[in-house]
Length: 120
Image (tube, rainbow, N blue to C red; front, side, top):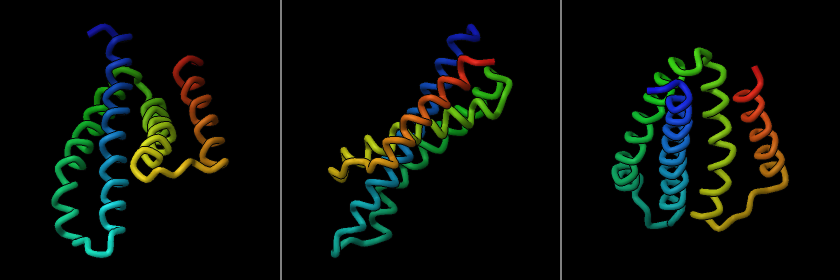
């Protein structure tokens, strides 16, 4: 696979992995917040999503280090995906808007991501 396309593939894998993992975290929090909820039943239902996300994040890091030759770039991709996806998923699942601090973090994370990818 061409180096450019491998890098794009890695970014997509890491974003998908973080999305699944964050989705499972937020969804489990929402389900467990209900008074009649059962911890083990919720954990059982969410576990598969979490495992798939974990396998994808491991794959993304492995391929990412090979593609970028720099673990810090891979880490920034992961952290930035969290900064972007967490507020979106939190709003989608809970209906809560991110605070001003979360919005500033999103902007700074995006700038950091772009800087890491495009500045050598």
